[in-house]
Length: 186
Image 1 (tube, rainbow, N blue to C red):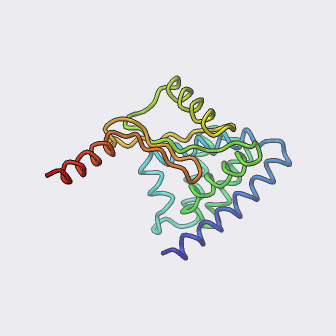
Image 2 (cartoon, helix red, strand yellow):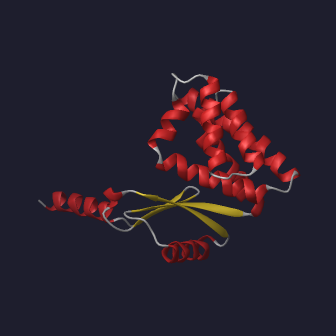
């Protein structure tokens, strides 16, 4: 499994680097990044889209046609549409999410930004996201973009990961620590 994961990571990185260079040469980095961020959200939000991307039953042409319709309907940049079409044509849709993540990381590195992964118990408003981003920026001392995920099992609070650092202020963790402390007393 570990070998398969690194293989997918290398594949995703190569595709992302090629797209990054092409988008950079065409001065379309921001447009492609916006499209990929939208596509990333679409993939995360749609079980049907994930099934389409991972289906061994659909052939190359069916997947290419379906993904082409999705990105065209979303109004994506021509370069993004061609990239997704190429990925589908090469039967690499199963790593598209990793390709998007690698592209966005390359862009963040170019801009000197760090990406913070923020997991919350419920969706954050734009104001809350801005406040969290500002607090993280003060803590790490550089530009920060945040990737917000929702995990209702946290009950409350946040879990923030920046690089190798993690801050867990979730209610779930606090309750687990309290439970362990109570077991120690009993």
